Image (cartoon, rainbow, N blue to C red):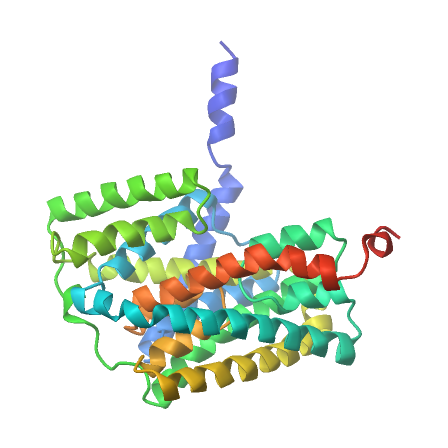
Length: 361
């Protein structure tokens, strides 16, 4: 008889965890609304991310629990899929060329950033390669721990890159007039209750299938695939209510900002120069490839910039949503880079990283 309440208690979040989550969401919402009120581009995601990040660095025990994270990613995927139309699908012919160039850009920026960290800041090869590798943060962290690399330093470089890109890209695209000025008409309509139920059920089903297949970012991409198919075939015309999309953007921003909750301010300050320097190297190399694609193809400049930005998949896709950028193009490229980094990084570390004997010493 006493085992049942104990089992249930294990499944229920503690009061402290609930309060921390509510505090995270409140701070993120306040930051997002402040940026939105100031008419800053990408205000909801950038404001939430910066506000939560500052509070986390100040010592607040902030965080977003797994269930809420999955729900936010599901909503983001549905919203991205609602942008899909037959016109967007017809542009997929240019993907093989740009994805190939993205793989080359990823390889070059990883080695460029790694060389900078080794030569300028004296990092060991393993830590430098892992810090310079864009995206796939979870896999990079696991590999860093296995190889005895400097995990805190790698986390600072990786997190700073995502934070800077998420905050700066919307502002840069807006100031230069590159980003589209108006959203696609497809997301203007709100789906009916029956359509919303169909979207949610289909999205959860596909996400669970992808999760069983160990597909990366299964909740976001599963929902995006299901929503894309339903909208691309015109079976469903409307999307989520605007306030739901806003909740998803605030949630993603809060999730990114909460990465600082496990990072000491002293650790951040000790590696901030390395993070900024390696970020500049990666951006310069990526910009060269973006320029080549812009000059040789008919792909929209804004789409290429976000697709080639060396940031996290969820953050860059959230920016695609808020900046009205082609979600299929951006999603295909960031997924391709994720797969490329996941497959090649262990081999690169084995060939070019410091020997395992040195790590064990």
